[in-house]
Length: 386
Image: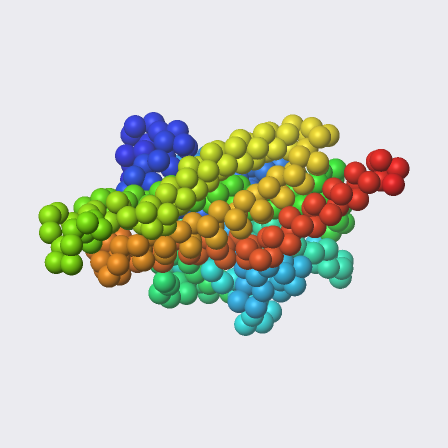
């Protein structure tokens, strides 16, 4: 598929449509969706000279290693450490406990050669919290794990089978100091830590905003798949007679879709699929605008980033909940036939339901939106002198 895309000179948008057409995610999904955007957003122009062509040409394959066996949403409690060694000008990446193992990153299990590891930066004996580090994990030539690296696949999942979710344990793995993302924070040769001006305190999470925007964008298509299957089935399947057919029936049976109850089940989901599509396109446009504002250092990027965070959190939670329940309702509307693997529903549902958890549990994301709205309300009241 990558060779076809390169041969045809496909844009990133056309590339995504190609994979959508075959109905499978790519093992390179997280390389394109998170690894490359993080390098472009959080590494300096000088740092990117080392990575841009290699990651664009797929000479290296990246993944995003944040979630650990013991911690997911509470990223401030992540245990993986990156300790600066001023004698060698290197960071030492280490997984101090079993629960510090990176767990779930897509593209890590079999494919990735490099990981964007989220770790606690320690220098001069002080913990400065989580930061981004590029860590080579497999030899690009032999694809074997590098010294100090334990990596593998976490095992079978309910769905999303084309993506190799994996685990990663680091045993005092050393990387050059320049492998730390240094656009907004730096550590100099002597180990001195310094923050640079940034448009927003959570600018390092911009890649996560991109993933949420992508999830919202595709939720309409996934719901449309379920509605399409169920509507086609309901138009062909016949069940029941008209009221005037008499006690023994007679004549041709009605299509299931002719029943008002079936239309009541499916048509609102059809409308929701369109709504999700257009909401996703609008959110993606908002993300692109904010990304450009951040790149050029626009002073208005801060408020725009906060609004993007709230919108992407709320829409991700809403759209994935509606789509997940909608796919299940479509399956049930097909009766027993919807339970067959041949119907397409088991794979569709199993693959889609990971979106309810990935990039933030939906219940927690709803609370993020509430927090933003309360803060906006306080600001509005303060501005009005109340």
